[in-house]
Structure formats: structure tokens, C-alpha cells
Length: 318
Picture: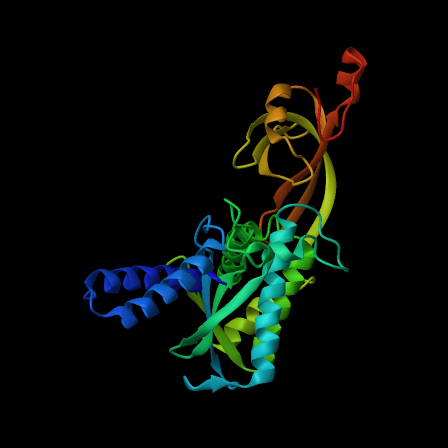
């Protein structure tokens, strides 16, 4: 039973109760029939847990050669493009919580499952919904699907903007996540189709196939430059909830900022070691000629500090 069916049963129970209240006492047979149905509905509702929240929903529609007006789309395209979108969402979501390998199963893949709950007209496409855990109507308080779709949308939007826009959008998305999103774009471009994504009362759309192809090319490995570097300096501060940091570089006295990587669980601990000489390891990434963005991978006390304090750590310093 999905959430829509749960709500339908709730509505039916209310309607049955109203009908029974209004039914004359002489309508014995009708009353028995309605009471039997009301009992069935109540038993069905009792067998399911109360939904914890509404699932995340999105609408993905397409235009182009594989689409036949608002009537339908060719099945092979529909299957391929929805699957590639679902894989992109899963890979982006997984890369938000930890390192994602270039191959193999996506960690916690079931956390990012999507249901097709209906067809979306206008052009033609699908209504998508976050799948409940274990086929029940229970959803975590914070939805991993929501943040994954948000980032997928943000990256596609930024791919039509400047190199700096795209660099910012992809700063904490793993290479595999970008590859999966590029596969989604390639699936459309190869079939001369474009998409519109409606999510949280916002709409993103590609105007033509040329835009899709350009976005695909800008997410290619040839355009995304990434390397891991070590930098000496001192932390200026960290915002734990936003997981962002500022770090003053010893060599230039410049202050760089970026995101704290998922391998560092307790970002707030960094605020206990402000102004202490450190060596940080960061991953720099930029699209095209964009300014680099930083993701903090680990940190340790510099040799100067360890010689005076006799302590050293990686990713966590007491």
C-alpha cells in the first residue's frame, strides 16, 4: 500500500461513516453492507503504520523525437532515460554521504529508490515519488532523495551558466555521480530529446537539444579538473551545520573556504583547534577555467606544533 492508497482508504472510511449516520434505521441490508466495508477499510488501515511524512515528489517530462505529443513515448527511450535519471539521483545522493567508487554497487542504493506513480502530461513524462522504506509508508525525517534531486537539478542549471557556476554546483559531487548524470544527458541528446524537471515548486528545463549536448560535454572528464593537495596554515573557523570551513594559507596569507568532506564526521571539533598550525589535505575541483572549490579531506598538526605539543592526528585533533 502506498501513501495515496492510504489516504484513499482514510477518505473512504470517512464517507462510509457519514453514510451510515444518515442511513434510515429501516435500511438493514444496506447498513450491513456498509458496515462490512467499513470494517474491511479499518482493518486495512490498522495493518499499516501511520505515515511519518509525505514522500518527496518530482515530475520529469520530455519533448523531442521519442515523444508522440502528449500521447506517449517510445518504450525503449522511456525505460532508458528514467533508469539513467534514477541512477544519477542515487549516485549523487551516495556521494553526499561518503566516498563513492567508480565501479560496483552504489552504497545504500535502496535509500534512493524512486517510484513511478503516474504519467505527466503536457509533453509526456512521469510523476516520480520517493519509495518508502521496506515497502512501508515510513520515511526518514531528512530525505536523502530530496537533497540528491536538488543537487541534480542545481548541476543541470549550472551547466548552462558560467564555469564558476558549474564549479560551485559540482564541488562536492563525486566523479561517478557526475558520470551518471552525464549518462542521463547523453541518453536524451542521442535521441534528440529534452527534459523539464519540476521539483518543490521550481521548474528547470532545457530549451533545445543543443543545450543538453553542451551540458553533457561540460560534465565530461576533459572539462572537470580535480586534484588532491596539501596546504599549510591555520583554520579560521567552521560552521558545523553547513559543514563549511575557512583556512588561512601560511604561504600566501590568503583565506580559502570550502566544504568539510563526509569522511570528517564531527566538523565542530575543528573549532577547538583554531589558529593552530596544521597541514590540511583538500580536493580541489574546477570546471573549465572556473575558480577552484575545496573539499576538506583530512587535517593534522604541523611538525612545528607536534614538536611543542607531542600530538598529531588525521581528520581529528583533540
